[in-house]
Figure 1: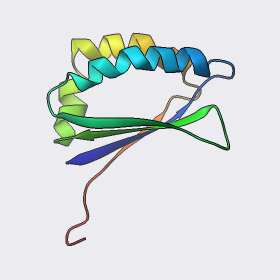
Figure 2: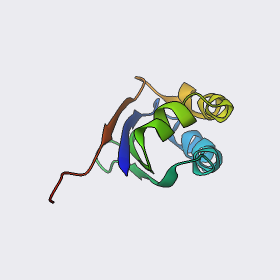
Figure 3: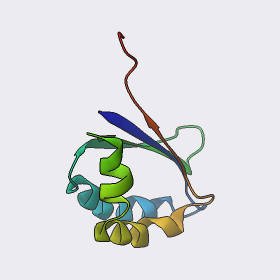
Figure 4: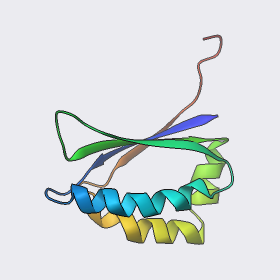
Length: 98
């Protein structure tokens, strides 16, 4: 399992619209091969900041299977115009023996 972490900063005044769009977009990601689960968390101190945590079976499920799919274009159309700046996305794996 790998964990994708995306730090999202939403344009001021757009958080409500972003959350509504994400409610639609989450169905897209949840339908992808290799998807395991996701969480969207909102920062308590900086109300325009969110973190998206997505668990994938493999890195390729996210980087190739999702990002190179037709469904990604729909995800992009729903969400990408809310971000400023564009999110940093990193992937994490378990630490052996812990």
